[in-house]
Structure formats: C-alpha cells, structure tokens
Length: 173
Image 1 (cartoon, rainbow, N blue to C red):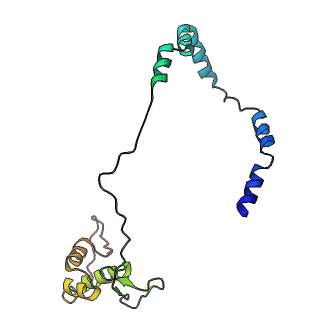
Image 2 (spheres, rainbow, N blue to C red; image 1 turned 45 degrees about the vertical axis):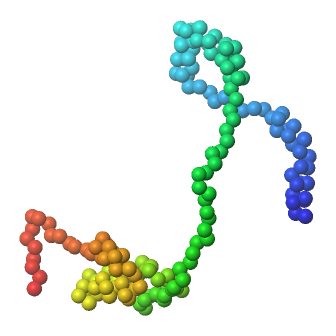
Image 3 (cartoon, one colour; image 1 turned 180 degrees about the horizontal axis):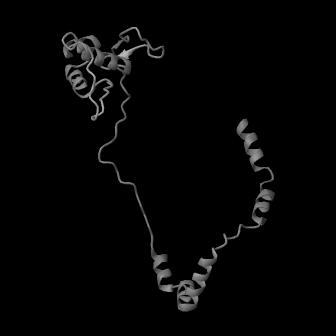
C-alpha cells in the first residue's frame, strides 16, 4: 500500500515539473582568467588552421567508428565457487582474571582478549620461571607455537628514562 502512495506522489504533476526544469536558464561557463583569455586569443591568431581542424568532421574516422561493434561476455569461472557457512567454534571458555568485560560472555578456545594478552605478557616478564610458555598455553587453552611466538615478538610497554650524556647520573642507593 505504501509503495502505491509513494509512486502516486512521485508521479504527480511530473510533466509540468519536467517542463519547468527544462525551461530554466542553463548555467553559463565560468569566466576565464584575463591572462588565459589573452594567451588563447594570441594562439588563435598565430595558428588559425588549428581551429578549422578541430571543428571539421573527419568522415573516414566517423565511418570507422560506426563499424565498431563490441560484444562482451563474462568468462565462465573454471571452478564453481562454494560458499560455506562460517563455522562457529564449538568450545568456549570464560575470561580469566578479575577484569571481566560486560560485553564478553565467552571466548573461543584458542583465542584470548587484549586484556588477557597484556596480563600474560606482564606475568611472563615479571616471573618467567613460573609463567612458562607451556603453563600459559595450558592456562589459556592456546597452542604452544602461538604462545612461543607471542612471547618472542610482543612485549609490554616499558618506560626507560635515560640521563643526558653531559651530566653524570646519580646512583640510587
């Protein structure tokens, strides 16, 4: 029902509205800069034959253009594309630690949150003998090679203040 009303309103008085748009004054070309106008006038006076060549129709080219016919077809794909539905992980776990995010209810096994990643990196940095790669993999249900890569390539943020070179650093006691 709504489509009929919309169509009726859209087509109402369409001829008069189209006639009004057509009869409107067309926008004129933007004015050229005086220096450009002078250069064009000078170029036209030096080479008057160029204007004739530009405005003249070339019948040979027009006949060749009329003979052009383009027929295109989409190529057939070699292998049919199968769209498989995305498989959801079958096993989930709850976030570890006391910093639960209200939006995260369950985490697929084999994945960790950003907070958990920072926590395990910090734990490993503070006590690497207790938080080994094997223990982290077992605790967070991760693969050992992923944990080793995580510990090798990622570190937590650490601030080091270096003393200026021209002053002697005061040793803390």
